[in-house]
Length: 139
Image (cartoon, rainbow, N blue to C red; front, side, top):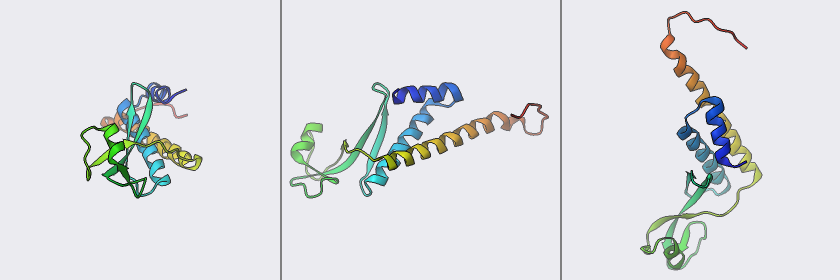
């Protein structure tokens, strides 16, 4: 089961907005990477074609790399963008893995935000009925 199937299931089962669910998943993944690699600026996006989350790190283009997490050589930068110049900041794909602890914290954050989104959807369904009498069954 890939990520696109999980997102599709949440959208269909719980009636959530697909865009919001995708943003929540990206925020959770970004939080996990920020926890594992503090100080690195990440950009996370959901790729609908592949069904994967793409993680990019913001790096400065330099002549000689001193800090691998924050800098990229001009030669490597030219592979991603032929117009890259020294002193430029660019987003490059980040391939380092995160650990299971970071994955668990991302899972908790995503679940919490999904619950908040569900509660907001229920509130929006019934907020215009304020002051009227509604009957129903509580499970």
